[in-house]
Amino acid sequence: MFENRPDIGGRYSALSYFGLVPAALAGVDWLGLVAAAHDVTPALQASDPAVNVGLRLGAALAAGVRAGRDKATLVIDPRVESFGLWLEQLLAESTGKAGTGVVPVAGESLGPVDVYGTDRLFISIGDVEHPVGLDVLADEGHPVIELDLDDPLDLGAHVLVWEVATAICGAVLGINAFDQPNVAEAKEATNAVLADGAGDLPHRSLEEVMLEVRPGDYVALQAYVDPNDDDVAALEEIRLQLRDEHRVATTFGLGPRFLHSTGQLHKGGPPTGVFLQVVGDDATDAAIPGRDFTFSQLKHAQADGDLLTLHRHGLRACRTTLAELTAHVDLPGGRR
Image (cartoon, rainbow, N blue to C red; front, side, top):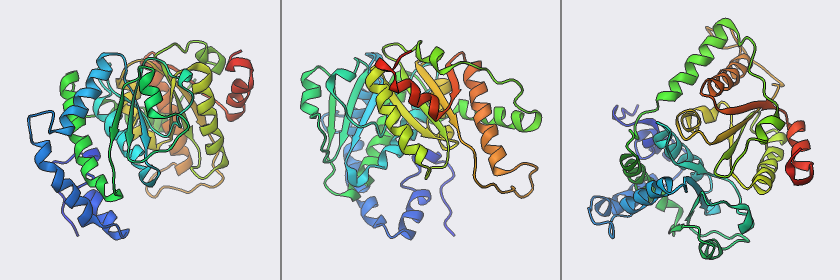
């Protein structure tokens, strides 16, 4: 049994027992991760931005938000590609509140230069190979930050650097980087649906909400589907087509997981999101011990509650299907 410090928030706990015990059990060299974090600590305590990479990165993230470049587009070494999911939660849940915040864009493959608007900040981690060079993006006027990663165990240092940068960014933006007020709001909506039903859900068509997409927006695909389903790959492809055709940033979240990562940003961050919710059927189901609803019913209640919450905030959101999305992107220009 490992007793963790109680004052470490979940998304900041990767280098505590919460992250290190599972890493050790999985066979990861956790001592190497901690050593990398230890080695970078003195630099992160320095007040000189020329020395403190966390300070520089945090200032750059906040400056990007203030300059309208709030879409932090992450380009990550394939060896540690899933690190983007952790960064997505760290940035979105920490800074997405009070109508501001960094919009992390993870897993969106780089495309031609002409599909990007003036709202992007590109950040690469480690060795990345892609058809569009970062130098090309920089030559076109996009800010580009490059962070080295020689060995996968260097993630220990990156975790600490990004945690410091996120706290600095929050301080500059004038928000508390350590709370998540809108996460509880979504939970309350789910409980209400489970208790009383969803009632008449707000209905807006895919065509209607996509006609309202403007420069500087981002389109968030929210897929309440089996992560191993073929629909996931299809939705990832549709995501890129939406980006190319509407020239806006895109995010992709599997529900209900994303409710505890980017969900805070969706409701509390800048009102520039356009949310497309896809809810799949469940081939199998199981009862939840001590509850009068099943896992499938819980998932659907979470989707209903989130859709209701987005509409209460006056945000552009709709429930759609894979077939509707496919028809939308297959049309000339991606528009009806």
